[in-house]
Length: 530
Image (tube, rainbow, N blue to C red):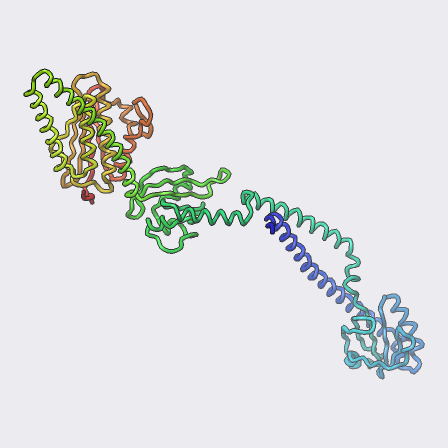
């Protein structure tokens, strides 16, 4: 069976509500109208009964045996004038002296609700008779001596519901037309509005999307957290719970109560996305992308997609290691080819002793460098980076000197091998570029890595082109560079983020066309052992 559109469902439901409301309202109104009509007839009947009871002829002749001949015409005239259904006059023996039916004159009445009227009581009652339900008023007839001599009964038939609404027929019809028309138009507009709010989707389609979205978020390897504009959590997938150490259901809770330092609410107010930012949440370092959620130009929430920094570092380290390995192989291949050409040339010239000495010299230099890296630089990634930079320096004609007093046994707080590879790699490459930008023959870059009891220090010095004051001020700006080519202006920005993450400090001394010295220091707190 084809599913009914939400537009028609809302329209039909709204119309049912309108019709039920009209029916309930009509019952209440009709009931109130009938009550008012009944009350009016009671008061009218009581007024007529008292009027008849005060007529002198009625008082006088109700005590006579043939008094009905005088009373009946008088009462009938009054009944016709006041449109009463009936007026009955009785003496104290309940003999009728006036009655709409001529045949009942002189007969005795046996009505059960008449008893109190013969004890000087004035009241009204409602009873069902042959003609229908009627409202009756009872009033005693008192003579000049204030003694009761009879009873007047005035009755009015209660109109039916149809008769009660007869006078309001036109108003009722117009009210129904206007109400139903407004209900149809309002329901149609509401249905269209809701349809647009739901992006023209049906409820079953929204349900399917919600189920698929929830399953997708929980299947993602990254942590996902989303909040609405009131900072209430709308998405918190399983990976995010594992990374943040959160248990139980947190949907609908305020993000600040669950995780105070996600910095996700900041995106709501700044309305700016933040990409690839490393932040500390609890005791965990994560890489976070935080993006505002906009609907029709209004920010209605924010979403954060993040990964554990350790896992990201592992992937980055693999990528960096592969690239460094390829670069090292390329440089070493070029270097060894040059060395082989040199040895081959010496042999061809018959200078075998010089060729042998050249081989021993290169061997000793390589062994010395390898021994230094094994004993003083404990991390293989950092050692491999330095080894590849030594080979690259030879290739481009720059003397790269690593101070043999350098030592690196652990990492500064919140940093790992990946951070150090980025830090040292960018510093060394920038120094190489600065040297290549000069025309002097002797170009050198000197590096010292120190680890002391109070912290770590990195010093890199070159005799390159140096920096102008304007360049020095903007050195950390993302995308700012004085070099040609793509993918420039990122290295120093990455270094800035690493320093910020670990509370590091950088000092730069530079002179244009003379050179640059950069000193980076980290305070010791909890270094990660290598």
